[in-house]
Image (cartoon, rainbow over all chains, first blue to last red; front, side):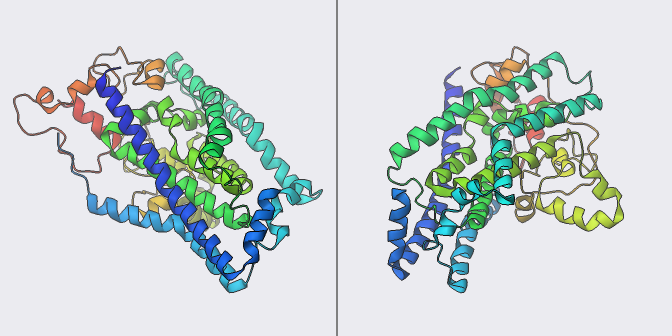
Length: 55
Length: 376
């Protein structure tokens, strides 16, 4: 392994992390937004979630 | 070295992808608004996983089938398929050399021994540390919506991971092992460089979504995806009757656009595009082919390529193919040889001619990239 290999490896890892994080943020953001809307429209929603987490 | 990237197309495709990721969630939200469904209040829905597990009827049976498929069934099925391929003489003895056999077998076994514990550590230790108190935060998502969310998230991410490894030159060598074989078979699905497999973005994405509460739908997506990708690589072409029998043509028309079939995926592994069948510049979809249709990277073929692999393949040592860049090939001129990166410098490729060798317009295909090196 030389410095160029390490450079390529680092770049490859960065690409992998970006390809992982971008959809993750979109999906988690979308679900959190949905959660937020549901909570806003229905106050019992948070209670239900808390109940599930306890279980 | 100058590589022209079609940034406009790339930006457009990325924008479409972002919309595709959010689409199932937006549709779910719309469905809740229209139907008035409140899954967060409906404990029969949120507790679907435990209900199904305990169901003595059909649902329980389906659940146990998928659970067993995931734990040991898929491995047994793939091995059985391999035995079938061997018994049908689909592996050419001249092509399936000792080096290729060793490579295929190690690539099949290694991820199960090395990668699986690492992803388990990621799910069980790393995620609870990074995202404490978030376990099952989205467990209220109904099963079918969770299924669609996971299927799109996992497979679209793999489409991009795969596509980038073909279109970004410095990533190609991490994926080269998957395309080096001059034959097709079930073992192709797992034949990868270890770094490629280790950093599979969609594995970690799905693991995170499982941690957040989408584990039950993820089980079904994983099993279905494994079946589709394994059979797309297999030399047992299950899709041939669909093209031969006329009344099945509508089914073929739908399937070849929706999922990866042996015909379309074999075209991706073709050694050449000159036969009008091969299309190694596209057909990047793994479970779904629909991504290739949406992003116009697909080519639907009902014929199978005459040759597979790469023109530049030098039967590099299995160690180099799995562990590059940690282990290099000793074969002179090989893309995996220690001095290969030096060869990519324009001044070394063409010291007399000032014009760069790599002025190949994007999207350069995998084989073209290495051919350019050979043409020096």
